[in-house]
Amino acid sequence: MSRWAFSVVMVLLLAGCSDPASDTKQEETRTVSPPPSLQTSKVERSHDAVQVERGRVLYAANCMACHGDQAQGAVNWQKRDAKGRFPPPPLNGTGHAWHHPTKILKYTISNGTGNIGGNMPAFRGKLSDAEMEDILEFLKQKWPDPLYEAWFWAEQRSLKPAQGG
Image 1 (tube, rainbow, N blue to C red):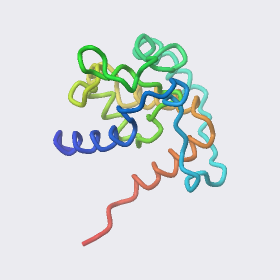
Image 2: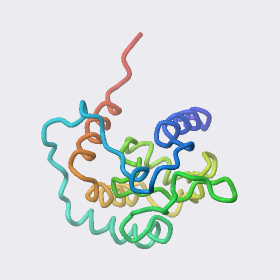
Image 3: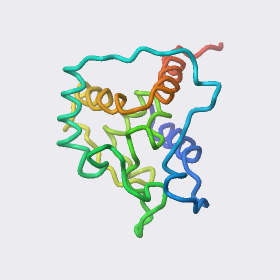
Image 4: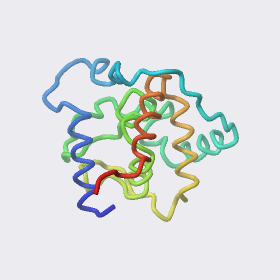
C-alpha cells in the first residue's frame, strides 16, 4: 500500500473513530460498540495459549509503557496533547483498534503513527511479522465477544479479493 493511500485510509478511519468536538465524560468517549447489524452469531476465537503468552510478553516489553498494563490507553486518548499529537489509544476493546483489519494494525505497528498525528514509534526492524501477530492475538483476547465478532466479520470482508472489472 502506498504511503499516500495508507494516509488517506488512516485519516478516514480516525475521522470515524473520534469526535474532537465532544466534551463528554471519559466513560462515554472511551466505550465504542459495534452496530447491531454486526452482532452476529457466535464466532469461535483462536485459543493458541502459546501465541497469546508470547504476545503478552512482547506487549509488556514494547507496548505497555504507553498503552498501559491493561491496554487501557491514555486517559484523554481522543484529545490532542500540547504538541498537537494524539496520546496512545486503548487496545483492550474500549477504543477503536477493533475497527481495523489485521493488515492495517500491523502496518501501524510497523510504521508508527507519527505521520497521522500520533506519537507511536515505528517497530519495523524491531518486531517481526510473527511477533506483531502474537501481540495482536494477545490484545484480541481482551476484546468483549461482540467487538471480537464485529472485528472478525470485518476482517473476513477485508480478505476478500476486490471485485470489479
